[in-house]
Amino acid sequence: MNKKSQPLADELKPYLAPFRYDGTGEFHLKSHKTDAKGGLDKEKATRIIEANRKRLAEFQEKLYAQDRWSLLLIFQGMDAAGKDSAIKSVFEGVNPQGCEVTAFKVPSTKELDHDFLWRSMIALPERGRIGIFNRSYYEECLVVRVHSEILARQKIPQKLVTKDIWKERFEDISAVERYLSRNGTVILKFFLNVSKKEQRERFLERLEDPAKNWKFSLADIGERALWAKYQAAYQDMIHYTASRAAPWIVVPADHKWFARVVIGSTIVAALEQLDLHFPKVDKADRSEFKQVREALLAEEDGAKKKDG
Ligand code: AMP
Ligand code: MG
Image (cartoon, rainbow, N blue to C red; front, side):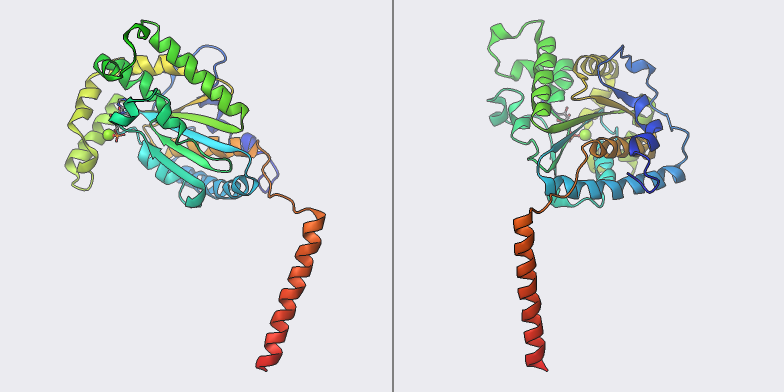
């Protein structure tokens, strides 16, 4: 709760509800704007971003101390959608001991020797921790769907690869997310929804600014050419894998500052719902603490007397 004791979910409502899809009703990616600003300007947004950082840092301490829930945050989006910088910005000021970021790249030979969820399962957050996935198993319904040659490289027995494979992946992912949620993992999935036009601007910046050159890969242009196929894959993926246990947040990402408002607000509102608190010390421990404290105080007094 904030100063006025108004729940964060109410205060932050304009940055939550319009972007969240939990599987109820229809979903049309095309009707989600990439350049929404939620009635904010950059200055107002900055104040909300900073307030959310403080809230997040406080919740994270309790999450860690309580050691019951874990938080899994998934970030997906086209190249230059702002996944890396959003993660960097939203988590500024959060104790690094309680967070772990895993970036999922092209699978290694060892990873290809396992089922597609394996590498993500071993990276899941422990209780009390926040796990941040920069890309995730959802690539299996995105890049792998758009490029049939990648699927061919995945040593799955031939007869198991049918036209139903994407539907099956959506089902399996949803089942695993439901399972995790039933075991205390809170899951939030962010799709950074950037326009093709804004991607062009960001690619140009990466090409022109020597400090950003490294972020650009020639392969990114090839993926850009497949924009429509990716949009169709995102539409399907969000439609079939959004659930109350693991909603998708379709984040307008053309304005990085607004994306940060939506992401931070979503996370703090979800944490608020967990009713986190520091664990209480029981009566027996408390009386022992009292004795230890007195002994420690006596030690200091003794030392002072000796010195003096
Ligand atoms: P980046 O996030 O720019 O470092 O790029 C990582 C690359 O790894 C992207 O091109 C992803 O599409 C690719 N990638 C991630 N997961 C998979 C996967 N399961 N199969 C194939 N490619 C993947
Ligand atoms: Mg890249």
